Length: 120
Image 1 (cartoon, rainbow, N blue to C red):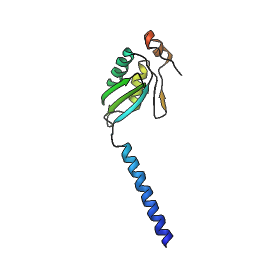
Image 2 (spheres, helix red, strand yellow):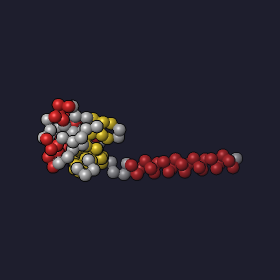
Image 3 (cartoon, rainbow, N blue to C red):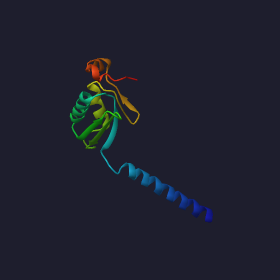
Image 4 (cartoon, one colour):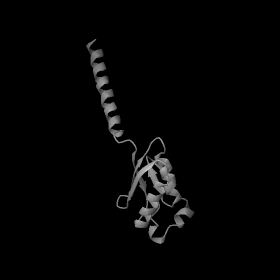
């Protein structure tokens, strides 16, 4: 009987700890960091403009130093994948949560010379 109670207590605390971890992830709903390849200020303007073109994007800021687009979304209106698709259409490869959405070769080739980043 003591073993059963001990197992129940350990299970309860394990589930409770897992629930707290999930809450930490959901603490800031609608905030996403999407990896976007680019080089310069022209890339920054193009990437952010593409992100803002998606209905439901509240803010978008791309940083060249870490190749990351920080976006805040209305989760009821859009998803990170829709933002990725809009950015990829402009010629920039994207990655979020192991989902790669890449620009076509034609879209990439249409970028300005200084914007041609190294593709994987």
